[in-house]
Amino acid sequence: MKFYQKAKKFLTILAAVAILMVVPGLCSIEASADGPVTYAVKYVPGSRDWRYQANVSAFDDNAPHRELYYLLQELKDGDLVVVYNDSPSVPDLNLGTRRLSNLTVTGTSSFVVIYCGDVDNCYLLNGAACSVNANVTNAYVYDTVLCNFNKNVGELYVYPQDAMTATIGCSGTVDHLYAVSRTTGKTYYNFYSFQAGSLGIKDGILTTASGRYSTAPNPASVTVTRENFDYVRYANDYPDVKAALGLNAAALYGHYTTYGIKEGRIAYAVANPGAGAGTATGEATSASEFNYIRYADKNPDLKAAFGYDAKALYKHYTTFGSSENRGSYSIYDTFDYTRYADDHADLKAAFGYDAKALFRHYATYGISEGRGNYFK
Image 1: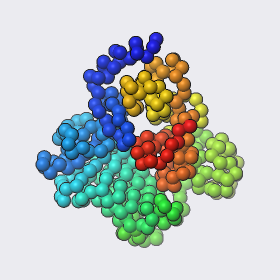
Image 2: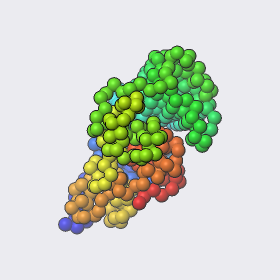
Image 3: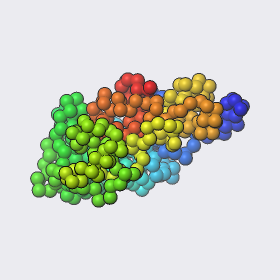
Image 4: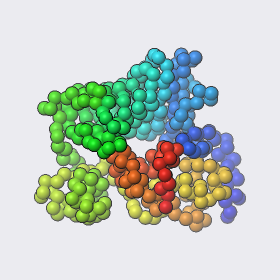
């Protein structure tokens, strides 16, 4: 059956729940709340309160916004929140207890105290001033930032444009601190296992006593298997092995089990096996592996109907597109993620060769930032 015949009923349902979502460089329609939702939050002096807008990454002062009370009812595990503040003084921002997949704090005019559930990825952009009261898996700090993490941090990445200027503290533990210049590639810090309350960086200078952290990584507590072996990290940690084997997962695991263990080389288990490099070919097996931009661009009828709505496009693909032989749109086949990483040192330092993370960055930020065309 042709798309237009099948889509009529679907579009009727879609229109009833559609909400406009603005993504840098893109415009799309949010069809449902099944997947992660992005919320923009800002303190609005006229309302004397924090307000929010759903399905947008940038807060629009001229668009309607709602009280934070309703956001606490809507938020679910895995959602994304972007915080804005251009007021001289603001009350604490309480985002409830839901786990956030992404918390981004933009440049602020005053210090913001943020309470929320655990955070998978926390991005602090240039000019941000805040405290984050949550356990953070990965924290990314850019340029001049004033921040304190009041709980534990797994990976703390600091990416100055050139010289280190950030001021950062942590009341909990920090598993790994890695600071590198985005322009020169100079590594400032690469240390591990900071004791609780010990990490301190003032104006870019590490103030932690040397006895309270380690200069070498600790072996992962999880048993490394073929299925969970972090081959990208193993290759990046050992340039000689990477030069010989590249990013061949099977070969790298074979090297580790045959030689690496005896040589005292350290390997790590990924937290979510299959969430990183994934398969090299074939159809997209999940929404995160689906190149919805390419699917829309290659099918004008779908682009006219859905724009760049990732969820609606993936739903169409799984319901109709695959059976209609519209092609394969796996990011591994259609997005040159290795070249994207190699061309941009800041992204490579942050994500390695994680195809899903690199595509997510490209779709959300890279296109609007003019980082080039990386579609095959």
